[in-house]
Image (cartoon, rainbow, N blue to C red; front, side):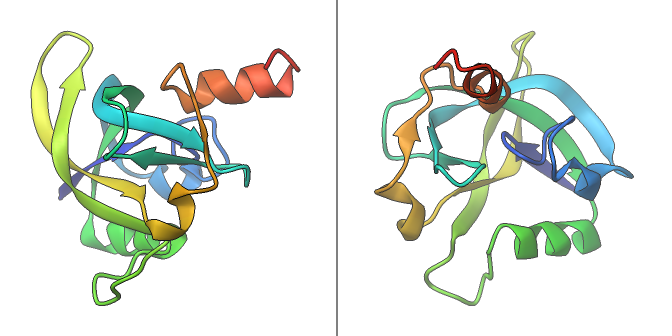
Length: 135
């Protein structure tokens, strides 16, 4: 099993959460350090080279088979140099202060230039505000 941190459409109540229906949730409230951006295409991107703020999400245990399916969704291929998303292990912090290491998908070259910063660091909050014309 591999720990996977998700911050966008793979989160609970989002359109791609079905990829995680049969997996174990470890933490529902946790965060990583980076910056979250709205790609304008209905999904966010985590950037690791920008501001270092909390980016909120959830932590899951996934099998290799599930991870392969999510790799395909995220446009990630470890043999390819330029991916839509890349992935690496980073520190995930639980809301109570506990920490662990987990895989996370972060923005590849094609997503970095066209994205708008999400100040809250939370895709669900951002999507709610956008859907209700508050942004």
